[in-house]
Length: 122
Image 1 (tube, rainbow, N blue to C red):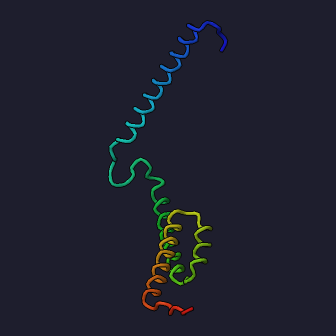
Image 2: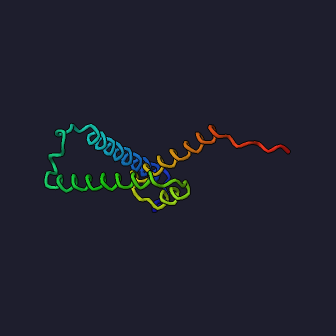
Image 3: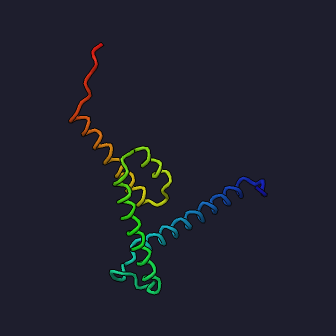
């Protein structure tokens, strides 16, 4: 913007585009090298000191999900489950609640198929 010479502006824009292209290529190369990095074993060896803590957190999460699953089995109201779904923060919690909602709806549909409501003649 500082220059009024059109030829100089074209050279500047061309240089900017070339720098952007080079930067994009470097980013793609870095991403490819990270994406195809070989694994170091079945468990993380690069972060051994945090592994017991993360394993403990995972076990706690699994216990909480099991407790939630038992709680969801006792709930028979879709609206109540929907409220829980809206309040849930974790993906796994929402996944369990959605499964419980699907199960209840399937049971309702099955119940309607087995015991259809009599139609009232008008």
